[in-house]
Length: 107
Length: 119
Image (cartoon, rainbow over all chains, first blue to last red; front, side, top):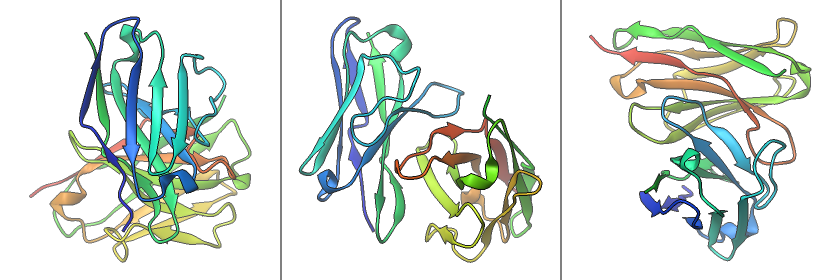
């Protein structure tokens, strides 16, 4: 089955840039989406189709996807961005796959 | 505005069954594929099942294939998940999520309903 791998945690200082990666075999050949989940809340879509932002998502959220790695980048990170982030992709054999999640800490 | 409201969760003994519901409003429910996604306590997201907009196609994660059945009633704007033969490892918050179609993502999520399997 298809596996997406994320680092368990990332730390960033306020105002700096956070990069969260998601790795999978030939991931760049399919679309990747990203979800933000704050404690006790439901997931929220922040990036779809690798680099598209839904309405209402701040411009500081951006994405890229190439080769085996997709990246979520948060520029000018704010305290409110502290959350768990999950990547997600589709696979022909597994259907929907989520990464294990990355906990973003804003120090 | 778009709303997805899950219900039907609770505490259940191993081997028993539950039917989870997801009531949709604020959009044309019959135009969208829908999914169930679950999250065990302190763990990550796990996709469970998908149903096409008209209910004609259904797909399941290998971990739930057999005991779980996804269905929908477009006349009632409601999505269902019948969960049978429950095991302790099925303990999780179960979310319904909307598939906008063509974007390979889930653009709207419900608040979730907690299923606890315990004797």
